Image (cartoon, rainbow, N blue to C red; front, side):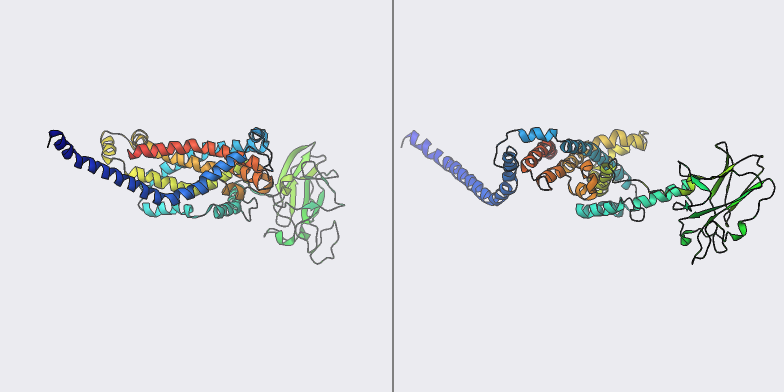
Length: 452
């Protein structure tokens, strides 16, 4: 046996082992592909195919039969509603993730110092269990402009009325034939000139007896003659319950209107003012001789303050962002809190021993160490807000739907919500995809870098 034969025989077992290993790896890949194939099939059917179909559909007209090339993309940026949707989406992307990341960071740091931290986290995280549909209905009711329905406006009206007060008789008006004329500002003035020593009766209607203040009493005893040098009068409800009264005359069953502001004016200037008593009486003393006009200022008849139009054109987008913050703040807090728990405590303790205060530790140590976590949270929220649909569609009323629309709602409205132009809707979908993809790629790279 030659040396060459011996070498060949000695080299054969390693070569055979390498062949077996290659076969094993190949068999493993085949088995892995068999297991992955159902997932790939679903991914292709539910993601890849719709994306490719939408891209192709975006080059055809509304009927899908005529090729229009980039016409849909050109029209997309000419349509004022689409331009407004892009602007609103930009507002969402800039405002909502930044606010959520900031709130999550602040709450995560503060919760560490709270005794019942777990219960507090659970309370803040609970809105994540509420669907966007339910949350939209909740906030649609909370933002209702009627203070009797909307809790926010009820609170705003209560605070406003506590500091600014409210009008006494918003529904009151002068009875026809009375000696009162309506001013341009909504006030009432006596048509005839009055002098010290005169008395006047000012009858109003339009106030329900049940709406009278508690201190209101009969005005019958208030219609007295004025003393010398005194200008006297009574403001009363010129309505007799049960009927039988005489218009323009103070009857026994008719009530005074207490709390009504009354002014004495001369040459257009207010020279004296007072407030009616429980029986509606008022008087001015110390007036100089001459002619005066008695005025009931417009403030007595001003409509009640109705609060803020949360769902009006100016505030609808910030209002919906507020609802979004309520839902997602717990998510941001929990993720940032997990990163905060993993921080090296020795670095924080060393900073405290060196004399750094809590604000310096937070700004120069905690935030820089949490930068990777904050970036992940921020980018995740950017992806999420680009796709927001439910809240905008449910909370925004029909008349202001266009003022609140974002790309996702505009895509639906153009395609299925009355526009019936799926070519333009597909172009909007492609635009939304192109905006989301960079954020997704950045997040994936960040995850891979953190794993390494």
